[in-house]
Image: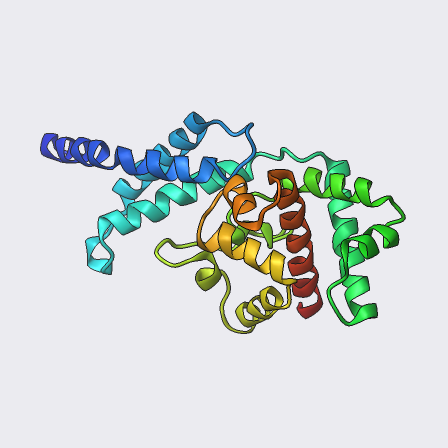
Length: 233
């Protein structure tokens, strides 16, 4: 049972860390489809902050700021996981692309070109590129989410980059190897988007291509990574 002093202290912490909730929500929103409202992320983040206030244990060594950041982000990710904004037909198409990339890599012994993937899928290149745009709207999530491919998301802690914190042991090394095997432009795109945390427009400015083209390349890179991780499973 909270004392009056305890409630005052809790209110002070809520006020102090509300700007952190908003900052994290803004950082996440620019990397998500436009249908995701900032207020929804903030509301979810506040739930995470309240949870942090109730569960924080100073004897565990972490500061409250670090613990709260993890809970806030985790609550926002939980909110995103409840939303399935990608139609089933597009998800089926995304799996078809993953399968095509996996088969072509085995046949060719290298990363297939766009036109080779389109040919394998028996569709014009323009149609394949539009498919990449469609599937990408469901993949603009933090890196640890997009490679889960429908399985339980990988747990996340703040403080290190997604590349460093994603997986442990052999799986982590497999992912690192898969990233290294990406075509150079796609590898640069992933680094700019996930490590440097640029948005799609900013990545396009660096690469000298349109935002739509960045979306296509991102989706294709994700398919390549998932194909590699599937083969190593």
